[in-house]
Length: 232
Ligand SMILES: [Zn+2]
Image (spheres, helix red, strand yellow):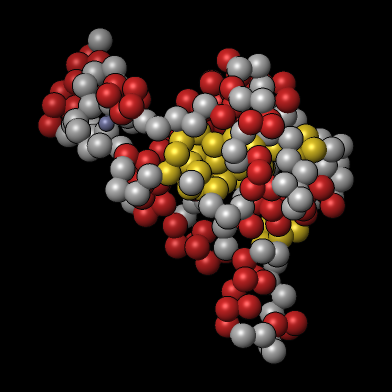
């Protein structure tokens, strides 16, 4: 009781703000206000057959993907951009966890829970990881793993930088090369499993495609993709 009173007292002077719209949260609300929860632009693609899912097309002919899932539509200057900004640039790691937990509950309700054997986030560049202190994709993975009761392997994938082979490449080519080279740290942890590959935003899908290819090459049985948001 005393602790509850203290929490209310603290909230009175330091009210938590909704991470999407910055309005103060009322008791009972966590991370997101009730209005934002109701009005966020959910894709609901997990409710569609794969053939009707517009995200699946982004990987056709490039990577065999079982389920291509994204929680929200990315709209500039809207709540989703604000959420991603908090997650990536304001140190608000809990945004990723909260959204992962909410989305995981929806996937579970849609019967997708047992589909996945292991959740793997797209890795960050080491330099970015050192600067930010956490991998935003892994924060989302953490929330998903909790809700789906599915194991997650935060460091199953890693980026490799083949600097020696890049000396003759242009700056742009070098960047592209570095950004799309991934390897599986422990192929035995991947082999025979259906991997849910997770990232913050799906745009062209090039990074996810490269990661998915590395997972399949390491013996994954299948790859599915889930992101917080997708750009149209
Ligand atoms: Zn809000």
